[in-house]
Length: 271
Picture 1: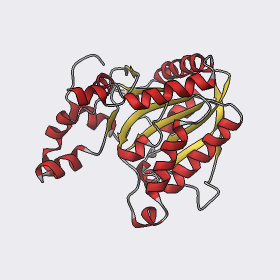
Picture 2: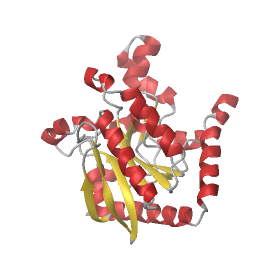
Picture 3: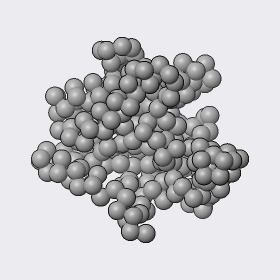
């Protein structure tokens, strides 16, 4: 998709009910995927899918935020808005990956972490902060992929990575355009205007230095994928990235990850 599109148009594409989900990507990218459940503390969060599979023959751990394919499933998966248990499940699996030297692939697609009373009572803030801390020092390669919405702390908690990419029509922002316009102008109807100001599209986020790569989508968007053809393009990107990162000594990898995190936003601040 090469034509210039408005930020609001891209937001609408990222939110399309038919948009490619983590389940779809897992089906076509990873072989012999075995899902694992529960955080070993409270519950299993259906908004997060996690497990082990093979990426072009390489054993990896996969963690993905899942919105659901139809209305019934979207309700079951809380529209991709995870509770603390989802982030604690993902951290459990990532620690396991570190133990067995498996690279971690994080698939991000959420408007944000769930903000219900129960989530706050069970330590949502701590769960998000813990993921950020542990991912920053996880002794195994970490790759993040934004496939749709990437909102607020709910997205960042799975986006501390050695390599971070976004699909062309994915977005990454501190909050929704509706929330931004409500705070800035006390008027949520100006969401389209807010989206242009927020610099939340993949191209803009890459320009700011927060991600490494933008993966072009086919005409009609990722959800127009023909029997996994586009997913296989993503698979090659991920496999190449994993192989490249695996060549790095772990100490050097962690040092680069730290420097990358420290550099975030410096160009934006200079502006």
